[in-house]
Image (tube, rainbow over all chains, first blue to last red; front, side):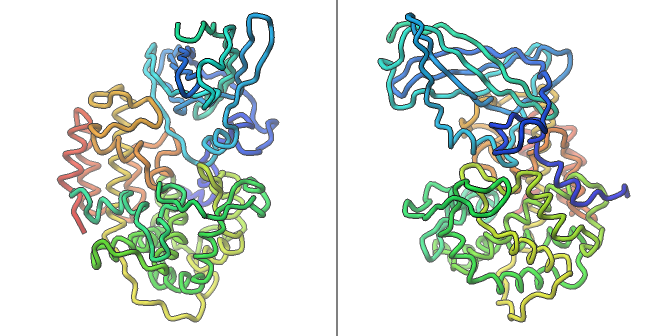
Length: 163
Length: 307
């Protein structure tokens, strides 16, 4: 029998120590140094009647199997219109914050070089695609691994509605 | 496993069973969650502070506090081991299932719903703790850390913050329950009602945990056969083998806990017991030879018995 860590093992359950503050329901950012998760994120945008849907794909860029938490959360999103106007998009902040808290984690294994659809997010829910301007979508996404986390920032082109 | 049977209930269907007040056992995890549920900003300190908290369910559970503590103590028996705590909590979590077996279709008595809601978090906690600590099962529960350490661990691990609501339990109630479980406090002098216990439940817990972790093992080895779309959150597919559905399709709180850490493997399911029951031991012996998720499911179904 190994020495029993008892409740110490329980405290180590959550992956919070490595998640961004926005993903950890108030745990101070200073506690969690960022590490790089060896994934390359790619995104596909779709204008739908429900809003702007961003589909997220993760590619394992390391030589071993890695795991990441499914459905990387969108930390922030904004559209920069052709005239330079920046519009922050509604992210349903309460639901997002709560859905990333707690012990619920689904660790998705990724084989070396494997690309996996890891989730989607609906931005501007209820607004419809007509409300989304043409321009560039500036995305900031949290990617959480068991012992690391990273924030991926991307700018994606947004075309006209219906194209 | 029969669809709609008792085991199906224990493995998650019970969240949608309503009690005699009309509340689903799973509260916010059920689509039957009453729209008039009163939610307030959590008044407790720590990570829960200010987040949405269900006080209607709390008001339902509180009057049964002493009875629940007496039931827990009676189910544990004298001087339990940590595995004994899991056995007792599993049995009490299964109490609504036993009610449903005795009165099919009838609402669950409120006192049984309160017992379930009091116990489910401790059941979840014990599953996680035992999985990670080989040999802990045989430790006398009295040697576990005290309630101050428990409260610190719950807070530090984010255990009290759920998907869309925080746990409504008061720290003093967690401490009282823990002290009764670990023998540091005598239970209230209330005669426990005849317990609608499900002694089969701890075996069902172990077997389901083993199946889900074996599913994760296969996925880690790169085997996704039959699991199309498994990477997409919120989109469980009815055709997936059972292990994947238990994991992804509205998992029970204790299966959430079992899968919350990335480094667990199926073999750790043996840690839930002082000596693994025969079906669990056989599953763990044969699961590594399963070539795909369907074979894992078939092995599980050959060993899981309806209570």
